[in-house]
Length: 399
Length: 215
Image 1: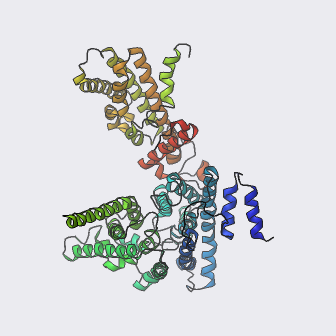
Image 2 (image 1 turned 120 degrees about the vertical axis):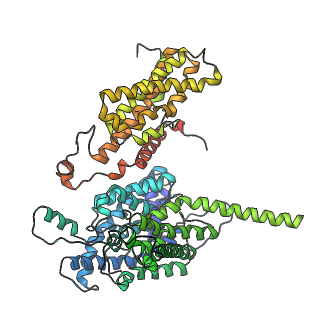
Image 3 (image 1 turned 30 degrees about the vertical axis):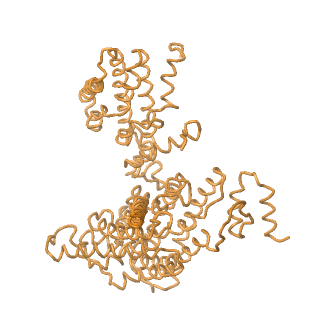
């Protein structure tokens, strides 16, 4: 008897034990469950939830590895000992800094999931598989681990479990986690220190009287919000050699991941495309306002407004949010027409928040959360519109 | 409670738990969100509401037979407004700082749904003693939730209770702050009050499943 049969037998024997859902979760990671449906006809497809999730995680891996390189690269650069970007030093440094984030994210998140599965006596859902990988990529590398743990508990419980678990949530749990961190511990989520590993520590030492150079690793959006110049070239922005949250800096890799998700039909190209269009439209409007001379050069919105409109796509977490979060099938609009509206407003509102509220440089997070809330409404009107149109057609025919 | 008959005691105990105005009837939420960032303000608010509701209930109950039913809402409003003004003036005289902190919310007690709800639902149909007990019970139920919410919001949001820094000083890094703990700024924002009330509702209904409504 092989392992497979043994596992099935264990499951059979302990049918009504409390811990069975936890066991099943591990079981289904190894083998397809042997349960069959009891009634009705069912379509069996290979791309179940787990396969879908695995694909997204695969698409995230390049961003993660790039983030490890970038963390080390930014650290050594800021501390005055620059290393080659693709060097082992940079990678190992970043690896050791980011690994704890990943471990905390998964251990805490899955812990909560298993707890709820046991309490509610259902199978552990795979929903956290992707969330757990997204979370370390969208936080600053210096975030204290306990904060991350608190935020993950909050995000999984309030963002997902209270609504009934995976597939029932209104808001994207990963973004709930980030929003929680952002509002709860703003000093750790914004400013010019947190994006470079070690800068916060250095600032503390200086405050304590140490004679050291202050380290500043402002993000480009942060510099622009203060009307400062930044030193990064467009290719730096595109390839991602800039400070930022762990895995969102490289627009290039995100673009590749986006293509991968579209080709495998996991991410919706409609949402991605319309978000980009929305962002470009808003960017063009702002550029137009600047060109028309309606805004004074000294205005606090000037430098962000005058940013070349397509640069917005490369800055901040916009690309990451659009490719990985806006396309979350659970929280996005379900109808094809609705997806166009949903995506367009995500892009449009992200840039609007980014420009008009420099205190919230990461507009894309708030824009996606906002549109998550509106997605069911959009769908409702799309469906109703469809019903009306068909009724009309029916009337014309019968008349 | 030897003083009260079983029925009267129920008037007080029911709204504390199984018929709580905030968690079961979901009334009076606005002020529960607005002033629960600090424990002190919540306690003052709870006492103010208790005064207005208990007194108002008694007055309404006394004149319930002579109020023309067509204008009863206006009469109730006048009585509530008079009592609220008394509370407001007393606070301004004896606790000016707190009064400033509570700002419009003392005045807005009059719009607290619990007040009008109890006037309408109870005082108009019951005697003064019962109405008094009902007022005390409902405002105590309201106050209880306020205090629970404020306890967690002030403790986690500001690291203090009633203004005392129980978790240590966040600037000087004493107490738990020495270990890297930080205040959760989100707790001070209104959404967390709503979420905290939601969590209380969750706990309450999973302990007493009879409270769960049918869908």
